[in-house]
Structure formats: C-alpha cells, structure tokens
View 1 (cartoon, rainbow, N blue to C red):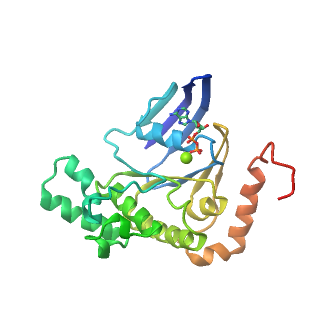
View 2 (view 1 turned 90 degrees about the vertical axis):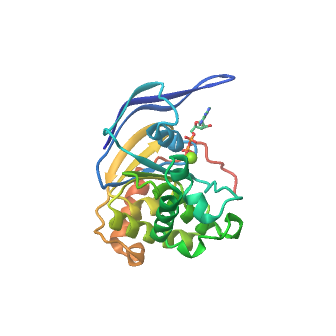
View 3 (view 1 turned 60 degrees about the horizontal axis):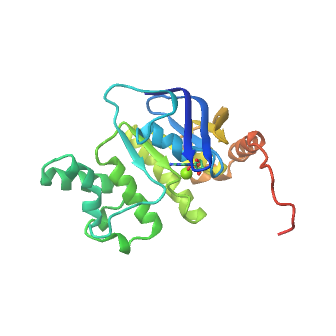
Amino acid sequence: MIKVDNLTMTFRHNRGMMTVLEDLHFHLEASEFVTILGRSGSGKSTLLDLIMGLIKPTAGTIVRRPGLTIGYVFQKPALLPWRTVLHNVSLPLEIAGRPRKECNERAQEALRQVGMDHANYGYPFQLSGGMAQRVAIARALVQNPDILLMDEPFAALDPMLRDNLNVNLLKLWHRTGKTILFVTHSINEAVFLSDRIVILEEGRMITERKIPIPRPRDFDTFGSELFVHTVGEIRKVMPIQPNLPREPL
Ligand SMILES: Nc1ncnc2c1ncn2[C@@H]1O[C@H](COP(=O)(O)OP(=O)(O)O)[C@@H](O)[C@H]1O
Ligand SMILES: [Mg+2]
C-alpha cells in the first residue's frame, strides 16, 4: 500500500541543518499492523508526517497506492472545545462538503466503533484522557480511510487503561480490516499490537522483527510466556541509551 525508499529528512535550524531521518526503506502491506518503535526524538512523528503528506521529504520517495486514503490520530487528541463530541467527529466530513444528515450518521457510526456513542452530545471538557483519545480515533475513522496512522495515541494514559485500549484497538482492527501504522516508545505495547516492529534509532531504521505471537490477542497475552520472551528479544536489539546519567537517582 505504501513504499518508502531512500527517505531522508533534513530540517533547517538557526544553527545549521539537522538530519532527522536518514535513508529509510519501508513498506506497508494491506491489513498489516506495523509499529515504529523508538525513543523520544528518534524521528517517529516526522516519519508519520511524511507518510501523511503533511511535509515533503528532502530526498527519496514515498509511493502510495493510487486512491489510498489515510486517517491520522495525533498524540494529543486536539478536539475543538466548542463543538460537541459528535460534531468533532463529523468535522472532516463537513469540510469535505457532505450533507448534514450523512455527517451525523457517519460520525455516530464511527463513535460506535470506538464505544463512545453514549457521549455524542457531550463536550470535550467532560471526557477523560482515554475517552478523548477514543473520540480522536473516531474522527480519524469517519472517512473510512484505508490506513490509520497512530502517533503514540495512548502514551499519556495510565498503563492499565492503555492495555485496555490496546485490546479494544485490536478488536477494531480485526473487525474493520484496516491497515494500521502505529508509533510508540513502549516495547510492551509494540509487541502486543503488531505483526511487525520496525526499530528507529536516531533517524535510522536499525532492524525489523516479525512478532510470532498468535492472534487473536487479548488480556491473557500480556501474561503469556511467549509475550514475555518476545519483549525480552526486542529489548536485546534496542540500542543501549548513550550518555545515561551515572549519578544514583
Ligand atoms: N519542523 C521541525 N523543524 C525542526 N526540527 C524538527 C521539526 N520537527 C521535528 N524536528 C526535530 O526532529 C527530531 C525528531 O523529532 P520527532 O520526529 O518529533 O521525534 P519522535 O516523534 O520520535 O519523538 C527532534 O530532534 C525534533 O526536534
Ligand atoms: Mg513524536
């Protein structure tokens, strides 16, 4: 669906140039769940912005299947406070000029998909962090895109809630057959969700791993021997952080 070759991204800073992504090769196939795993500052969000087409690469190519549509879930939900939940979700359709009835019906359906249709007429300030992020996912789904890009959508949430939302995300993925490109700095989350993990370190893709854990995966998966073993294997290939402070905490 998407093929990336020789991708390089350099930003101009006041003190010179900074290469954020260097010579990446990457592909995404239909119905796959792929995760980009890397620490903060490794270039993950920049890569999603490039794939979405929000910014243009310095060098290299991004080939998207003709007619491909993409939905983007940002790290912060970015809901408009003066619009109801329903009208936040319907906004992309309104901008696309769809009739009001269709906007509302499709927004309701998208909210149903994420289990948030009870909150249709509420406002963003009434939502918890997890609820707001589910509404943001509904907004990304409302135009029924082929691919969902998700940038650390649950990173700000507590771990139990995060596991819960990840179980639900896999259910949604099975049900809808979407292709998902997910970004996280959590090894556990990446292993739980993915068919394949691509590890990004300082703008370079250092390795790629297939995840051998059978599907469907649910809460029990987190406790399974294979899960724990796989997390350990991924941990081994993650580079040791250079310049860690030596002082005791
Ligand atoms: N628009 C920009 N202009 C200049 N530098 C940027 C810009 N966007 C990102 N960067 C820099 O690129 C690096 C990678 O950022 P980012 O892609 O956000 O990483 P991640 O999402 O993995 O935390 C960071 O050092 C960041 O400061
Ligand atoms: Mg980021």
